[in-house]
Image 1 (cartoon, rainbow, N blue to C red):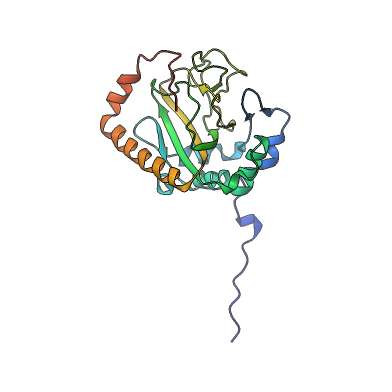
Image 2 (image 1 turned 90 degrees about the horizontal axis):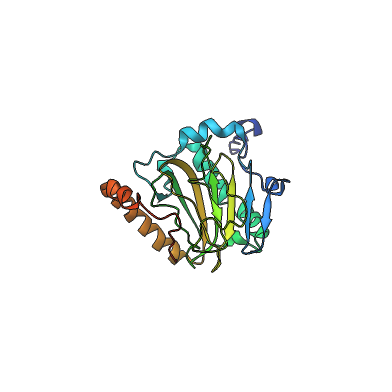
Length: 243
């Protein structure tokens, strides 16, 4: 008896890819190696996906970054994360930051829907992170600096910018290689600010540790979110912490 041959899925039935590494080479992309390796790329996610990504983004009840769980998200957000973390796209990011074969390293995905004013203090990221990438999904942003990503020359001055700040608008992507001077942060902002963060890490042990800590943080913020908001309400604009 001949085995039944299943029909191949036509290309028309497969959803179009959301990411294309070639877009990283657009004329508007900024790649720098000083004072640390970073890139800023705009229009990395197609306009045609705006509505479904807005619909499928998780509706966390509290502010902050939380470890990605597939069941929290709709299909388009999960597809975007799958593409962001695919070795080919990771390698494309790494190649522009002087880190070959970035896709070989473990990665941790966290998502944020809301900020409070405690977030965004100046820091470098922990030594367990090799590269961090941020993809913003906000359809609009007010004419303010609050919540806009800043790459900085110093840990004690939020206004000592390396390049102009990046507004967290839909399709904007920023990535940087962690270094002892990879200072970054943003001015205080409270409200919705949708972003997907991918960190490529030094080991699976670090991924497990950070995932556990993120889940505990999610529980804490669920129980004490109002306290968390009030504690950060009066933070200094140049507040910083060393990782």
